Length: 287
Image 1 (cartoon, rainbow, N blue to C red):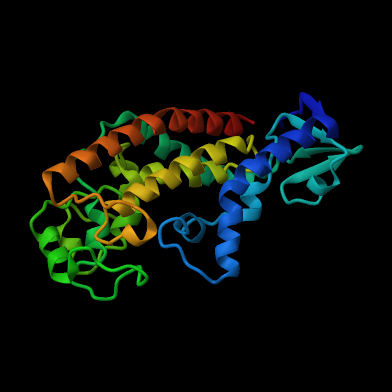
Image 2: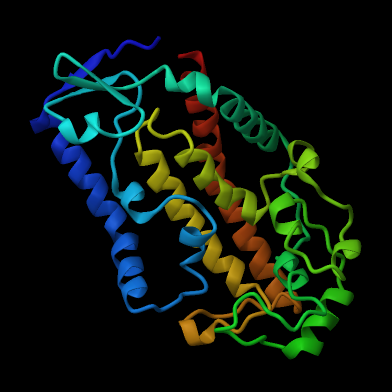
């Protein structure tokens, strides 16, 4: 069992929690405003709809294992915490319940980090999700090249998606066009650091470590995931100009070059976060 080595009184941990909340509000406040207006944002809302962390949880700071909080009744009532003698700590016993999932995620992160960046997908997973299907995933947006033009791009390119959770949204007609079929058992062997969706998923790996780690890693990965999402949609078949975003025309040589530059930049930004997440998983699992 991990023993808390640092005790913070409210004058110490309060400003940390407030700074974390204010940083998160850059994204939570606009999201709540859109929600109140019943307005959908097909790019930015992805992180709220696809991933299962709500705005209130993103705003909440956690100190992580090894840090105890004094005068913290609001933490004492949260799941994952225990209070003893007026001191609140993360409950290390909760780690055992989560051990199988945390171990699998740690393995995925570590294996992904050892692989070379796979170039050449050019974001075609998004195109494969609407191939020969007129029921598009984002009805607020139109297809930049139209349905027939979109289908032509898919048919004239090699589809080489390595991300299981992107592949599962391919249309029935598109699945046989991928280099290989992908299912959950393939994930540990297929995921690679050049995949935009694998980079976005660092956010999921981070928040699933809560409350065992300092929550700043969650905001770090959220910021990266949002940047990736915007490029992912700019390179998609959708016309994102009404959202103030410039399309990346991956059907052209210039568009492919632009996509590849983003892909390499994101891989560089993701690498230290992926390493940090492996270290955090090791520390939590060591308990």
